[in-house]
Image (tube, rainbow, N blue to C red; front, side, top):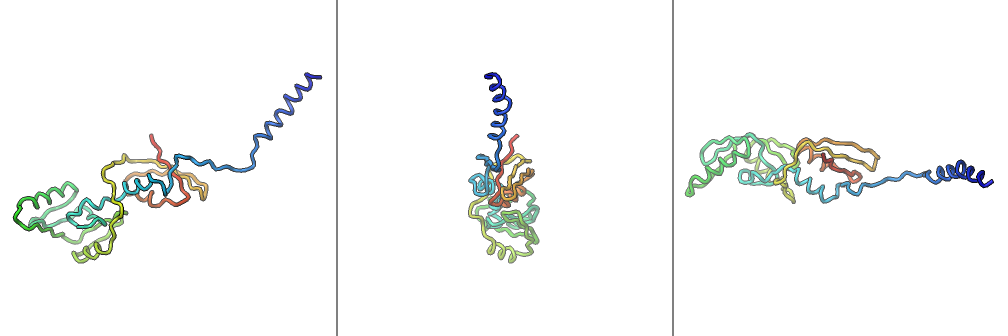
Length: 195
């Protein structure tokens, strides 16, 4: 009789108990404690890292709210200078430094295109239009972080808790990263996928 009781216990009661005890009737959402959100400190750093560095040409346009897009022309102390990259800024500085006794002047040749911190562009047709644009465009409160370079592409996994959807995004450059970070909503969590 004892053996029969063991057999019944082993083959009938034990599996029934295991089936009932393992069943759960509610869904659980497990949060990744390493996931980042719109309010994370790292998100703020990524935002500043991805911003268009609008302060690099301040000695030319006198504004941190925008930068002049390459290529463009300027008359520097009477000399025509083509500015096609940041390396050409040194040419302008060298012309300014050539004489300590002259009054340095720089006149931009219009039209030219400027880009804001968020990479949106504006065509400017005259010095007066540039002055008005400068007066009406606010500089960022926290400047861009230009001293860190990101190796693109970067893959970011995003989970949207509002619609319970997960996706991966491939970020190919700074404007893509800026758009991603600026577009994060409150219900989204993300993590950067490392190789």
